[in-house]
Each structure stands twice: as C-alpha cells, then as structure tokens.
Length: 439
Image (tube, rainbow, N blue to C red; front, side):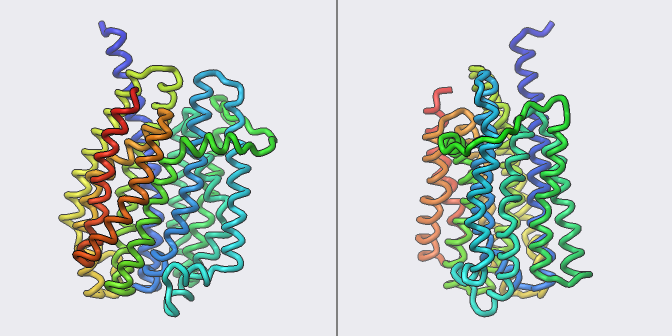
C-alpha cells in the first residue's frame, strides 16, 4: 500500500506532466506561426522581407512582453490569493484587461502616424522601409488583442484548464498559418497580408479561451471597476520574469541588428533573422515548461506546500536540460537544412553567415533553458527581488556587454557566441538566486 508521501509525489509528477506537456504544445503552436511568417515572407519578398521582419521584431517583442508581464503576473496573483481564499482575487482579471487597453493606445498611435519613421529608426534603409512599414502599421493597430490573448490564456491556464489554453493557442496558430498563405499568395497582399494574418490570429485564441467562461469549472469573474495602479504593480512584480523572457529577444535583436549592419550589412541581418526566428521555436519549449510549472508552483506556494514546490522545480530543471541537449544536437546536425528552408534566393553569403549562426548561437540554450525555468519559478514563488535581478541581468546587462565586446574581438563569430556567454553568466547568478529563495 502506498504511503501518503508516495501518493503526493506521484500527484505532483502527474500534474507536472499534464500542465507542461500541454503548455509546450501551445507555445510551439505560437512559435510555429512566427516561423510560418518568416517562411512565407522569404518566399514572397526574399532577403529584404526577412531583414524588414527582423528589424521590427523588437517592437513585436515589446508588445508581447508587456502583455505577458501583466497576464502572467495577474494570473499568478489571482491563483495565490484564491488558494489563500482572499476576497480581491477576482479583481486581477478585469484590472489586467483595462490596463492593457490603456497601454495599447500608445502603440496604436505610433502605428497609425509613424510606422515608416519607426522602421527607419530601427535601422531600415530606403530599400527596407517600404517593405516593413505596412507590416508594422497593421500589427501595432491590433496591439490590444495581442495583449488580451495573453491574459485570457494565462487566466484559463491558472483556472485549472490548461488543455483549453493549449487548444486556443494551437487554433490561433493554425489560423495564422492558413491566412498567411491565402493573403500573401492567392490574394497577393505581400507583407501587409502577413501582418493581417498575424493580427487576427489572437482573436481566434481569445474566442476559444472564452469557452471556459461558459463552463461550470470557471471561477474567473469579470466586473466593472476603476483600474487599480496598486494591483497593476503587484502583477508586474510577479510578471517581470515573463516580461524579460519576451523582451530579451527584442533587446538582443536590436543590439545584434545594429552590430551586424556594421559588420555584414542587410545580408547579415537577414541571416540573423533566420537564426532568431528559429530560436523562437527553441525558446517555446522552455516557455512551455516555465508557464506550465507556474500555476502549480504558485498554487503549492499559496498553500504553503514547500516540498511540492521544490519537487516541481526539480522536474522543470531536469526537463529543460534534456530539451537543451536535444535542441543543440539537432541544430548542429541540420544547420544547413534549416537555413536552406528560408533562403529562397539561394544567397550563398547569407547562407554562410546563417549556418555558422545556427551552430554557435544555439549552444546558449544549454543555459537559457535553465534561466527561463528558474526565472519563472522565482516569480511564481513570490521571490520578486531575485526574479527582477536575474531577469534584468539576462535580458539586458549581460547580453549587451557580451555582444559589444565579442563583436569587437571576433566580428560575426563573436556576435553568435555572445548569446551563450550571456546565458552562462546569468545561469551562475540564477543558481545563487534559487538557493537564496529559501523555499
């Protein structure tokens, strides 16, 4: 007969497998449409299109980062307070919806009046600006639905329905991929078509998530209220790891774009576009592990079950390390094939840059996986201070310093290696942060 501790151990493992597997599938679905965008744009617009997409990707990352920070933080706070049976748990969902709407207005104004200037500011020349402006304008005007999609998904997942959150993400991605093809090729809308497909896909995700509100298991309540800055700040504190997880790719892209433009021009930026967009798929695995673990950790933490918290963290770290080994092996063996898929013009210079990039850049995921999982754990367990320190180090300080120093020493090879160096530095600090969290 099984002991109580053995039953609890199996229960933690079963919940971990359920939540993480479904979140990995959902995150892979989300990354799939970004890859589809890259592929279809490479076919329709060639290297110019990939370069334009990569130049505006940081703005995309900023929108996703803000939406993710508020969504994950508010949902985490909702889950913890609900576990503690606190009355204001219901306020976090409507508060998140209202604040993201207010924040979105800034992006919409920029998109409507200054899309061309924004692309030029990000490094676009007279060849790239016309290609990227229409794409940028459209996705900025749809900023609210991008952020709301994150909120709906995070709250549904934390309300013990990860399967529906996964279905919503996959449905959104499938819609995007299909509409990418339809709008860019039969309808010949080019980059504007890709932007429209991307802009309408989160609407599908929101509609699917909304099914949860009609079920008996729903405990999320929406009511009219005055937006609370205090609750927004509480959400942002716990969502900072999610913010930096998203924004770090944007910061890395901005820094790398400007360095690569000096070293290798538009072809180098296009090569980095292939590497960066492929890396989004790898990151999706770790985000799936992190976001799948978050509802479990915050729930166990809210109940004071530190043993279950530590068990979930251990499972998450082991899973991320196994994934890292598999990803590094695949990208090193198949780097040529990966690059060839996106190199429609068979540009040999672009291919040479990108193949080296895939092989060197992806080594960094050996440490990046641990960092993403660790940062998610620190936020879910309310170690907001350490979550902030490790996230800022990973997303800004380490990558910027390593990129500039390594590029100066070794050119393009140094740029590719900077990511791995920054993640290694962060991993060392992350070990200390987790040990100091006292859980």
